[in-house]
Image 1 (tube, rainbow, N blue to C red):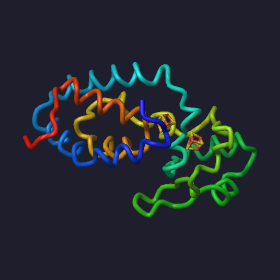
Image 2 (cartoon, rainbow, N blue to C red):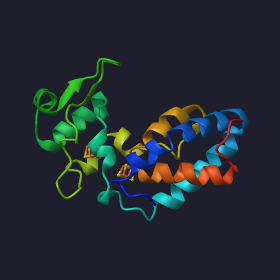
Image 3 (tube, protein in one colour):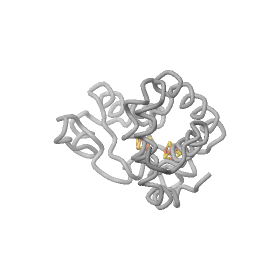
Length: 170
Ligand code: SF4
Ligand code: SF4
């Protein structure tokens, strides 16, 4: 599997091919069958993978937090909600919600651990969403995640084999 430090470069090299593969899936893939392939590959590849050696997602994305999550994490850290918001969050102009303001995430330790692991936001738990239904409608996001996450990159490469995809114009 591609390493965390190489995944962006490797994915950029395949950018055009991946765009064609997305169009190929959009035109030809059955939604349930594609979900079944995603789920199988997600489980197969993530179980043995040590995310602690990667943490690219914690370095590359701002994490969204809902009100309940802000309350739970501020309590976990022993801070008031207002202090927690002032210290760590900013408003996302796109949706008006809160997100972490720093990249890499302020809760990522030098050793690759999450300081709020027990109560980390759902968007952290669920990333990269490759085990969720209706992936056919989220392929653009998945192509973006393949630039960050070595497992998503590998899932895409294996899907190309499963679907006998060749890099040509369909
Ligand atoms: S909260 Fe934890 S899991 Fe989520 S991005 Fe920050 S360090 Fe990573
Ligand atoms: S989910 Fe992907 S990007 Fe995040 S730490 Fe695991 S392998 Fe890396």
